[in-house]
Structure formats: structure tokens, C-alpha cells
Image 1 (cartoon, rainbow, N blue to C red):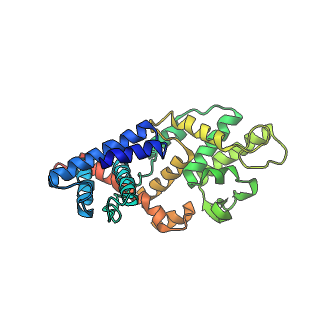
Image 2 (image 1 turned 180 degrees about the horizontal axis):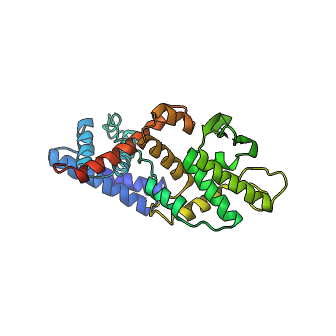
Image 3 (image 1 turned 90 degrees about the vertical axis):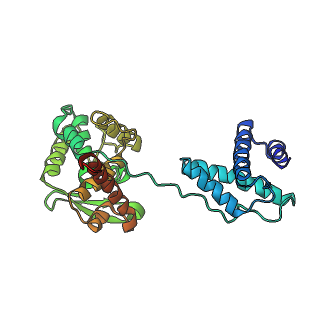
Length: 293
């Protein structure tokens, strides 16, 4: 049988694992069951692209994930490449069949109430680390800057008189982010606390007690530690706070173009993903509140 010779080829010539070969076999069995249900006379060598597309659609109708469907299509593609090389078929029926596009997951964000609970209701330790960590969280939430941008932030980048932070983003592109009185107070309190422990010139705005800048992993740990106190999200990272900033801005009527500039996105398309998030929220509110939803 064609299928058996293909699986034997995967084992002996391609050195595929037994588990992988089993998956290929299951995929081919499913495809065969489908085309036989369409026409008993069909064989692997006689099906065309329309039959393959029909199989893909049937898998989608069954609720299979896009990744699963594309993996099965990849198995079929490898099978027909093998048949072509063996001159067992003249045409590859999978060649012009495109699998389903994988949906991009919507950005994960923290709701305003949870952020207020953390920043206003939670008692941060009255230590250097506690004051610093709160200031960092406030910066992430109030500016939407990236983790790398916060780590490389310097004292001279923060203008307390103009209430503006100069951020150096990807490809050294700089942008200005305004901030309000609330963040000014928090940052001033941090600098006062920092001066108590380190009087020398600092290599970064946010540092350890020793004056050394924070590492990416330590920033991740700090954010995850504090977000865990108010949310049960699987992902609790600085980037989640960036998403939170953008979503909160749009939910409070900020213009998309303005949010794009604040985030440092080059394309408006990148920023538009946050409008999907806010629309999902709107949909949930509608479904919960409207009597005929």
C-alpha cells in the first residue's frame, strides 16, 4: 500500500520517531476516510485539490484548531511529495491548497480596577526595593514603555519640569512620553529613597542598591510578583502592562494615532490589535447586559 511504503520511508530513510510516524499514519487514515465518504471509488492517486480543500473545511467544521489542521495538511503534503518522487502520481493535489491562517491571540491586559487595587490599595514595603518596585509598576502602567526601554532609562531622560520622559526604543528610535503629577510624585519619592542608599553616579534610573542597573529577568520577576497579588492571568509580564496601558488609553477615548506614537509603533496596524481587545470587552458587556443578546 502507498501509505505503508511512505511510513516505512519515514522510519528507515528519514529516521522519524515512532510517535511522529504514528501521527502521519493517523492523518492519512483520516484523509482516506474522508475521501471514501465522498466517493467510494476515490484513491490516494485519484483525488484532486477540491477533495483536499473539502477535507480541510470538514476539519474546521469539526472545531479542529488551525494549528491542528495545518499540521495534518503538512502530513498530506509530505505524503504527496513522496508519491511524486516515486512517480506514483503525476500531480500534487495539495500544491495549491492553503491552510487556515492561525488567529493571533488578543493582547492580555489587566483591568483598570485591578491596577488601581495594586497601586492604590496594596501596601508596598517601606524599603528601597518596595519604593523602587512601585515606581517601576507606575512607569509601565502610565507610559506603556517596553521592558528594555525601562531598563536603559537614565536620570537625564526624565524631565521633571516638563513632565516628559525621553525613551529610546527599537533601532534607537527616540520618542517623548508625557506623564502626570501622580507619576512625578512616585518617581521623586523613589529618587529620594535611592539617594539614601547610593550617592554615586548611577548607570541607570532604576537600579539595585549597589548602583547596578536591573537585569531583564529581575524586572520580569518584580512585575510577576506584584501582578500575582491582583490577577490570575497566566501571563504576568512587563509586556502585559504595556498592553494594559494601550487598552486603558483606548477605553478612555484616546485617538488610535496618539496611542501609536506613545507606544513607538511604526505602523498603525500594530496598534489596531488593541481596538480588537476593547471591542471584545464591549461584546462581553453587551452579551451580559442586553436582554436579547
